[in-house]
Image (cartoon, rainbow, N blue to C red; front, top):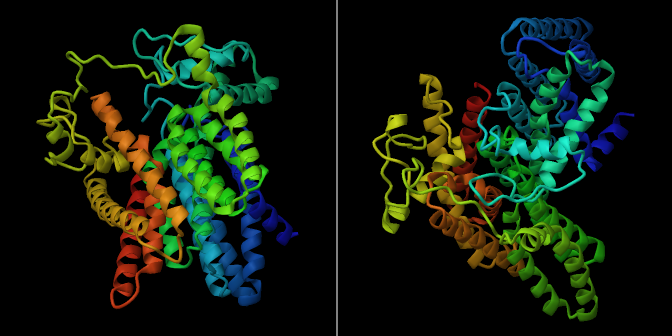
Length: 560
């Protein structure tokens, strides 16, 4: 039975992950000090099951008295956690403590049984990465650390359009002023459907008096959806790393950078279309790699689905298309299977164009809105405007006051952040927020995290350039071309966007998140390929830096 469950989880990681995420909808995030009915019963069942599993696992290695002592200690600790959960103002910290206890106990059991294999360490990293995201999501409310979410022209307004109209129509894109209706509808449709499902499940308990309360809970649980997408990105990233046969410290280092990267945690709580489009972007990378390895019709349709749904979530997902096209062209001339591949490319086009461009073409025909339309923020007197800085300053003015984004005198700074490179480094760790700034200890953690990130970014960039240009046994020429084009497309598009829309928010790292996976991959490749007297030094330095980065990130984002 245990083996069957294990195989089911491995074969269907996304279904398993979704069920785990859904289980946390029982927590009422609108009332931090209270829980919904059934929560404690749910925790008790899980805790008893875990204690029983630990006892069974350790039974062959301990005497009866020591096993009894271990069970007593675990029961007391769990009891304290439950007491904390029911009485503490921030019950998510009890969930964090219980999760850390579970990971620690699993680590000790696997170590005692000499079963701490690479795959099981990967699973522990997955659990900790999920726990970091979950704690963050449960720590903040739906209106915290968001981008244009709650006002009348925000993302939730778009979600409510589908919810209130029962999915019977599509919104009209309004080009007067700034609003979110220009975005493709896929995320908003899914989010509204998720709210409908929650309200349907709760319908036996909903009355006229408490309907608004249940609606607020369903709205708050939109973050459960983004938690799933962010966590799914970990799984996809790992599949990309293992596609290139990364193993041992190289794959663990690469995976840790993704699992504990602050951007994925911030996006886990951001109720907008960013993380879904990123997840689809990463799925497009993985499916394109798999198609090149095995160019079948089903595989190319998977690529089309990933690219199409990514663009249906956010048009910027189209940035993966040039790199995918490179793989298509290389395989076409390399394999000489012209007829077969022409048919596959035709099927790809028939699937991807309606999905990816249907929304834009509809708006162009119906309202004359350009396919690539993005609202412009006003310039005169706008506090976020940075177009008054020269091109040189936008690219090379690395003035520095602290590790957070400088936003002028209203935030205690003598200037406004305007350098693209500096904004990438800062917002990749803290977003456009001041996370950790108001605590002396977390301020120290934030600084260590920032400089570890700088070192990782520099080394990763060098690794990308070096291994894209250099022949390697681990990454062949077609894939070097793929990632070279992909990285260049993302970064050049980002720089152009930053100048076309000269406001500080346009330089947010959230627009180039897939570079995290590219950088982590090539850092792992460099750890595998560097030989000679510097091999051990480089590998140890990369591992230590990634560990410091991961620990500081976990500590910071679980301490809010």
